[in-house]
Image (cartoon, rainbow, N blue to C red; front, top):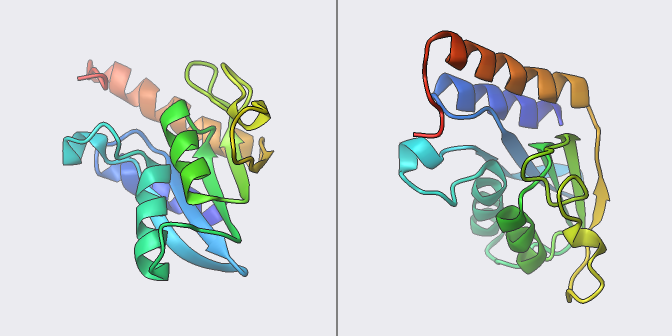
Length: 150
């Protein structure tokens, strides 16, 4: 999670919402990503998607069997869909997301028995640090009158 936090800070420096993610296999980071939808003009460029893409490229396979994903914020529906398609075995996240979280905060996709893949989910790891980074980012943006939604 520490490396995901480093990536989240990189996102902030780039003017993006500070969320970072890493994919780990056999104890080694095989994929990294941070939020980039603003700079890439791509609504799918969430940290998780970027890390999955990087891992798939590095491993030469879109199926990331035996991998875990660590992310600083609870994944949304889009990201959980990609996580399921990649066959990620375990998702570890920091802060819960009461607005778009798809691991129990708003909806619980990992608990949906009708889906054909399920991942173990662990939340709340370094939650205060992960959530604090997001809170500080949005407080700074509000202080400058910057609307992150645009």
